[in-house]
Length: 296
Image (cartoon, rainbow, N blue to C red; front, top):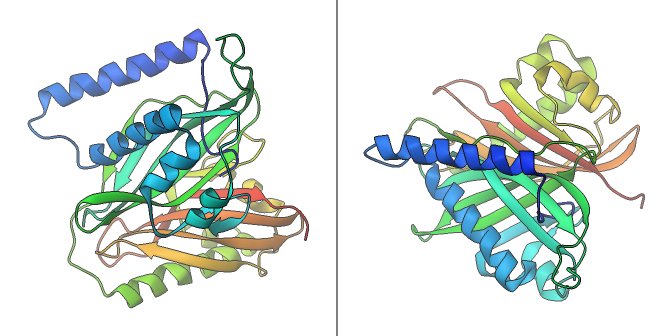
């Protein structure tokens, strides 16, 4: 991600909203006999954030990375190798997950939240906030019991952006197991269809977007589907897109894809979350995170 995650002291109004959101979640949990299926991912990400504060970012990531994990620095790189080769930086990174979604098959999901990057503490006083934004972490269940980080990316938003949100949990309906190859091809085809639809716009693009799609771009506030054409406009044409990979849930209903592209504004790296709401329906884009890359 762009400096992955998140930092320290927030403004009082932000702390109040976060506390209210947590209290609301606790109140809801107390009335339910069973936790929400996506709560396990939110809890895993919260523990991840605590570990990063206690031990540092690199040790926390290395303890959770799954096989073949990818992080963006700023383009997609092999996560284990990158963290092994880069010592911990002095800046403090902190994050607060507020959203989680899990596949009906219970083996793939993603979390999102706010991050801040601070200067190193001086005289036991918190360092100045250097940057803030939103991040996305994709999790995969490995060996049937361990949630591992397999993708991590983020966008640095405008300095005055309010990144705090109420907690949101989502679980897709259970479905039968899917053919892995076929499911991967389905979502890869959706990535190609998106590149074409961005060029043409209109109905072709709308049909690929979830009604609540979120578009994250460096230096901008998060955008909704109504601003989709504008959010992609600077990167047209996208025929230079290079898909690097797709991770799909066991039931073929939730997927994350990533890659790089060449547009009129230069090079960029992207991470997308796709979902299939109903059996037999086409994938729709739930989240698109796109950040610029330096010129070659």
